[in-house]
Length: 127
Image (cartoon, one colour):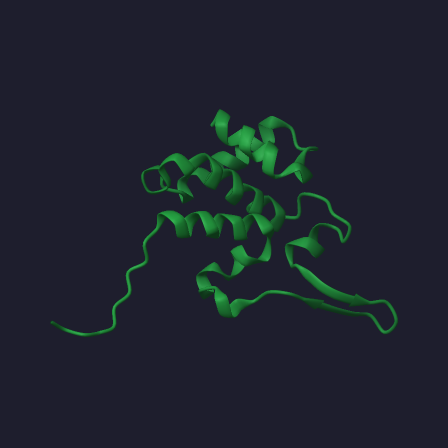
């Protein structure tokens, strides 16, 4: 878990205010969701990214728009008559992965996962 904490601290600097104990607890909560066998050498990086994503979605972290703004990827906003729009391209993600597309950490996790998980497609043909 030490390597995962180190990687988390490197890639998710917006969570610097969280102490190591809190980060480790979140890493422990995320650990059952990722296979060491599947991710192999990328396991610690994957768990760090998915943990950062989960923390962001839970409202932790900071940025210019506040915690919700980045988690939902604000595309534009207007002050007069208040208008806010969000950038989420659901067309390129499976519905099950749509939430992961809401944060930069989730998108990086998806990229890692695509490197190690081979999707099986069936054209419905019998041989």
